[in-house]
Length: 219
Image 1 (spheres, rainbow, N blue to C red):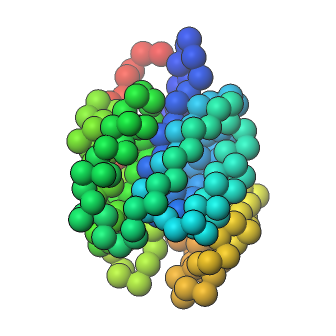
Image 2 (image 1 turned 60 degrees about the horizontal axis):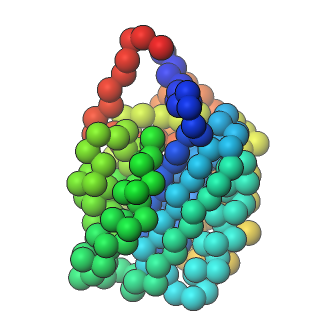
């Protein structure tokens, strides 16, 4: 299988935009990939945006971002306090938030939820990302949940054993408010990465849905 790599811009650091509806979405869906990218591109710039949180969840998210992005050169973090589970009722505020913080960042790569996610907050963020970044590679991450809305991904990012374990450890270290939930489970997180690894002939991997991807034949 042909393996492609993310190219570093010649004149500046790589720019990675991470968009999540809730405080742990990005880490669950793309945490291993983000750590891998930052290890491969030290000094990369990260713009991390979370739309809905409480004061407690905001503190969790801020600590988690620092841990997951330890290899980043610069991190811009925005943890907004919009109410969870009703983001479609705040569509104008969400759009203003992304217009203010995401668009000016001019990212090279965008991570956002999957547009077919059954959680309404996640779907809204996916739709917004597709509207705002029409000429960018957008990697839509997946989040395992009770709804049973997982689909076979189009793109796989291999995650080595140590990094997969590190991702799960960080999730449990930084999000104590979620540990009583049935889906917040070490076996579930590792199991999904193992399944995606099988699908791409690796041990562990994270899977993404990509609407459009342009591949150049020349360096």
